[in-house]
Image (cartoon, rainbow, N blue to C red):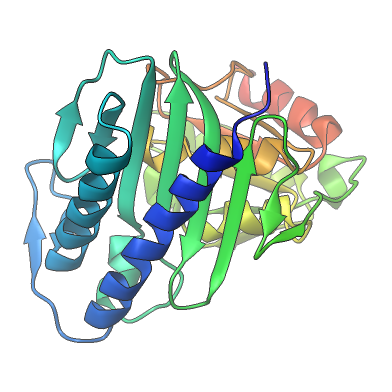
Length: 259
């Protein structure tokens, strides 16, 4: 696949930078939390940030589609579709933890070609794009070498993600690793791209939760798939496995596929 144009990468970065001051302005400001139909929390900050990003994209690339967590889908059948999660980690946001972020992806024919992880409070930003090396705050990064799951430090946001028989499968991977950290939402995928973590394992994820993560991790040398090892797309099952080293990814998939 041909490298993504600099103009599209710059647009993705501008979109993330537009969201950043909005979320900063509401952080630790006592915003009200509303429960959506699926019982997930949302705040005014989420909605305003996504509205601002949509306005920018509709002005700059009006033929492109948009899928957003808070404001739905426009032109979803377009060749190019942006996938937005304006505030990934709302639970962290509402209790004053700085580990929430904005996720922005651009897909072409259903496959992600740009991904941005922006951490507005921490001041860290990862950008991955097809044909380009992933950068953290403008500097190229690489995942780290790890030959065995037994040496790997892994992360999941919460064990509550693992419903419907998924928990024992996660526990097999956790127990075979060097150790497991909890929390962090999208931040941990940036840390994997930069070589600090070896494996992220999650479930119950929506399209806007994982699409931006793929170019970031892959552009740093990592592997991202569902638990069966299949490439993620718009219709994936919500399980996510992101590894810095393909060897760790392969070993984790083997454990996850056991009955």
